[in-house]
Length: 155
Image (cartoon, rainbow, N blue to C red; front, side, top):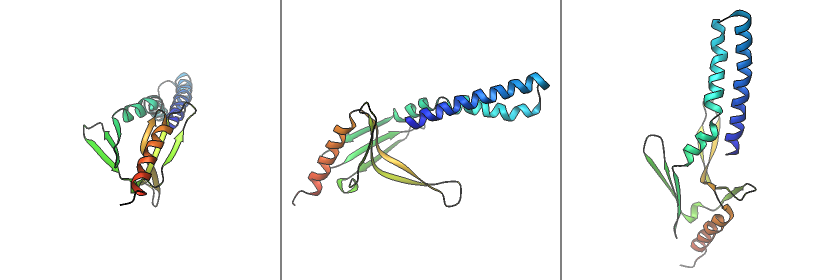
C-alpha cells in the first residue's frame, strides 16, 4: 500500500506539472500539435498513477487467505472472473518474512515469484503471501506454529 501512495503522489505531481506546461503552450501559441505529448503525460498522471491506491485495493479485495492444520491457502480472483488457488505446505514455508507497519497491519511473505522484465536479463521478484493483514504478528505465530508442529513432529 505504501508503494501505491507514492505512485499516487507521483501521478498528481506529473499531472500538475504537465497542466502548467499545457497552459503555457496554450497561452503563448494556441492549440498546437505539440500539446498532445504533454496531454498524454497529464492523462497518465491523473488517471493512471493518481488512483493507484484504488487499483491496489481493487486487486486485494478479491483475495482470501486460509490456514488449515497442514497448509496455508491463498485464493485470488482477477478482473476476468477466474480464480487462482495457491497453497503452501509447511516444507514450503521455511522462511516467512513479516513486513509490519506501526498500526500492526502488514504482509507475511512466504515466497517470491520471479518475472522476467522487458529488458534483456532483468528479473523481478514479486512477493507472494498474505498481504495487508491486520494483526500480522498473530497470523505469523499461527503459521509458524503450524509449520513447526508439522516439520518437527515425530512420525
